[in-house]
Amino acid sequence: MASTFNTLLDKLHLSSKDDEGVPAKEPAEQELNALKDKYAKAGQEHVFAFYEELSLPEKVGLFESLKSFDPDYINEITQKALHPPQSVDTSEETKLDPLPDTATASILDSKEEDIQSWYTSGLDLVSKGQVAVVLMAGGQGTRLGSSDPKGCFNIGLPSQKSLFQIQAERIWKVQQLAEKESGKKDIAVPWYVMTSGPTRRPTEKFFEDHNYFGLNKDNVSIFEQGVLPCISNEGKILLDTVAPDGNGGIYQALISSNVRTDMRKRGIQHIHAYCVDNCLVKVADPVFIGFSAAKDVDIATKVVRKRNAQEPVGLILQKNGKPDVVEYSEIDNATAEAKDSSTPDLLKFRAANIVNHYYSFRFLETIEDWVHKLPHHVARKKIPYIDIEKGETIKPDKPNGIKLEQFVFDVFPLTSLEQFACMEVKREEEFSPLKNARGTGEDDPDTSKQDILNQGRRWVENVGGIVESEAAIEETGVEVSPLVSYGGEGLEFLQGRTIKAPAVIEKED
Image (cartoon, rainbow, N blue to C red; front, top):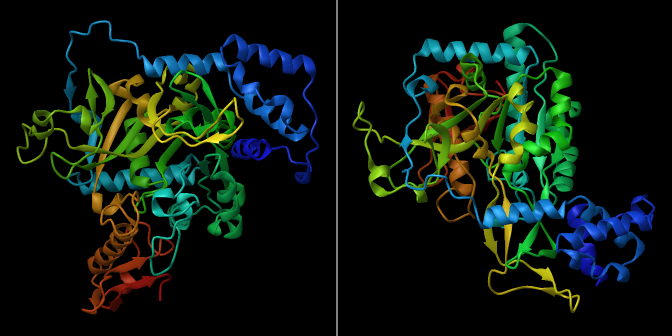
């Protein structure tokens, strides 16, 4: 029994172990009874079934865990998720339209002077200390065959760099570019890394062991998203089960972790948020920041062009006059295959969501006004739990409950079209997600690695370099370190040089 509860408390970081220097102190009887009464009134009194059998540290840990949840709120969101309110007028058809031209831009066909203007403006905002980055890094590399945080994963580049290191070096390079452009020194882009219960401590250790990848540790904050208990099919909280509240938990976490307070103190005005599993992500992209700031919007998002009508991706569009994300499963074939009336060779709905967003700080200052409106989504799962009659952990063979989560884009419909913008970027330059185990041939470590090597090859050839590959070698291309080039700039020293692929360029020489 004790080992079972220790597992739960460790998940919550509430084990209150004496060997960690935190003496256990039993909750006051009045406070304990009040909490028991609160759960009983909510019909969830079973969570205290084994309380008296626990050791003192375990009692303290369980008490702190249960105190962190509001059982009435858990009941409320569970009911809303399982029985979502129906639209007042169910006869009205959903109306889908592309975002208006006034809210969009595309790197694929924008004028070079516009792109340069956004870039210069973005670097200027970086140099003024107004830009920060939030990384959503709560996932483990389970599908990749690793229990480590996904950001620790080595995709097999010649340099053997992890995703965390690649992204940290891009932040370092943006800081250097801003310093060069402005003449200022010690420019910082604060990096706020959102983890989950299972990934926080390993992430902190990974950053410490690698000396924060050359960044100033005072400008790196590792914080944790919230968790929610899992719920049985009968609506009961399952003992020994908690799960992260989804990437939509970012908004509440920015408040509860004091990240927003830190941003305010630093004078941050522009925030770039993205997911850790994209090896090509342009972190703190000056072009994106400059574009979004020029539009003076609250939210902006990057998209890539949908490959074909049947590609299974969510789409950024307007739904009933509001910006939104619509999943591919929600769109019929006729809608998916519809062509753009002004450009018939393109799909009408082609803006694929890559979870790469911009927020104005003024918008994040209003989180309390709308966070309660974000829906919770249901995922039915086989969830191991404690049998309250036997005190044993049960591993079910069929779905026995639900996990509740929020999505980061659920806030889009709460934003007006006038305060929303979208930038289409080149897939081959900015999007290569890592989702699957090596060998699947799609969105796996090998495709991520090759996409970086292909990008480096293009950059080298663009400045007049020559890349040669031996016929017997499957891996071709060049890894260009972010410390050398952020987006293909500054590589003129390679003009006329021949590089044997695969290769890595770590410095100018």
